[in-house]
Image (cartoon, rainbow, N blue to C red; front, top):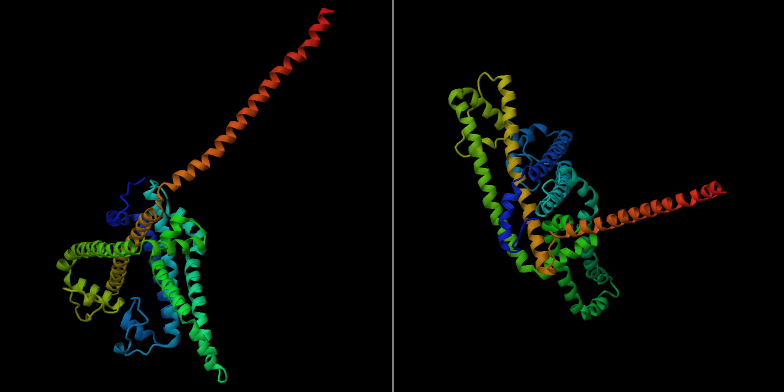
Length: 399
């Protein structure tokens, strides 16, 4: 078990624990699955709307945001494309929270001393707890809807021509309860925002139902709001530093690999970059200190394949850095929740597993002892029966 200090200093372990092949592979796999689904949905939608050439020329294989300004690209996005992008980002939401729960569980087991907890085990855990993960969000939304339905109902009743003003006047007597209801709604909104950060960690640590996850979410918001805010800000700063270092090192390493190619086969390398820039919607030429040559007069099919592989490699590097960012978020929020839980209830979540194992071992030991006692009693009975069986024969011989 890792010895934590249970204060802000534990957050700085997130950078080291997040830089793990197991954790980053989980998030990288999630990012790759989402990216593939998103691009398929996007280009199916533009194929239906007849805008494949426009989108490919403008964006290539880049994932795009539905809220960006498409007018500067002279593209009029159709409704079906917006729907496809919305579905794609909904898939991203689902995949991220599933993979984040997996990484949080791996992190918790590692903090408990189990370094051999596998990705398959974490996938099984997430498969078992997926209702809890998304049920927490649905429960918070349901609470908010239940709270807001009352003022909405009074507003609709106030629009009735005959008695609307009377209902509005009577509703004015409920302004103080309405104010308290508004405070509850504000608390629910804050709890929902916090849940976006901590539901995977809570699910991994608590392993209970949706109600318990929602309760723990409100608990950290109500009992440790300042520590929650300060720790999360520190984690964001630490993430920015660590991810920036990894991004710079990744870019520098890629530059060192490509430098000999640029010096030895400059013409071919320029065509490869030009091809890769086309696959990525012109983003390569926006990188500082990189200049893209115009289209070659005699393009090569072999270099076209090399350009495609170059584009995929750039996407891989972006996914690699992004997976570290996501892994650090999952690991950091798990550590924060373990620390806050200790501050709230003086409970060390890292010791729970050991207690559970002891509780599981004790009944089996008792059963083994009971079986041994039964076997010993059976042996003793068999030994006592043998002399008794031999007495009649001795009596016959004497007579």
